[in-house]
Length: 182
View (tube, rainbow, N blue to C red):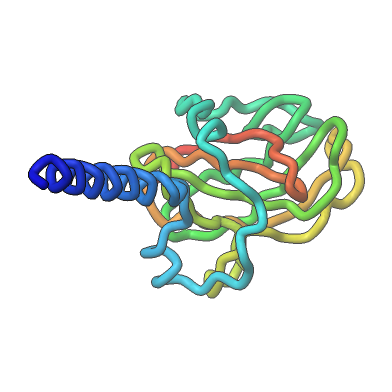
């Protein structure tokens, strides 16, 4: 009887240990910021998937500027960039996105990740009146400033620091652009 009781307790211990570990890992550590979502109106659902691999690949150096047409842009030359008006926390501004190359279809989605909390993210696209935020905006327009496609947008980042802007077209991940928010 004593051995059966020991095995029973051992089995229960293993069961709860394994289920506890599985429940800990079953939820993704990547998630939109609930604090941000409670404080701001967000008008759409996040339709892209952010992976740990995307976050691990972020080089936290501010992305370089490059010349495209008559404009200086921040981003990745011959891939993706925007005319950078600079970023000041809690101040929205207009930014003209430019894209080069293939797979230039679908809505633009931008997911912002802060260097100090890389597993929580927020939307930065806004309506320009600072009344609501969104994860995605419309589809791209035609060529502009030597790019194959472009799209105007409004963006606002609510906190200072370095932010990686993960850029998607449709569900296709393009790349990230790191900005410094004053």
